[in-house]
Length: 96
Image (tube, rainbow, N blue to C red; front, side, top):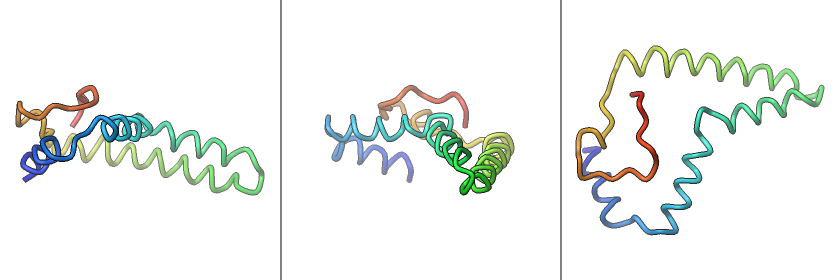
């Protein structure tokens, strides 16, 4: 089902404008940099410091549970690896 949906998107919705937009949105999420930056900014004012600390703790726990445990336990193949006709717009990730 994943491959069929992605092929449909590739054939019917992909446009140069949307490609640039979604590559930019995807890049924002690389390594959680946007969330690390937001959390760091929350540490600056004394009023939001506790929220910043909680954000960093949540990011750390999320990394451990999602990236180290779940992804390696489930080990699901990415759709573009299962279907050679899918053409990714961003570099292929090496993890699950």
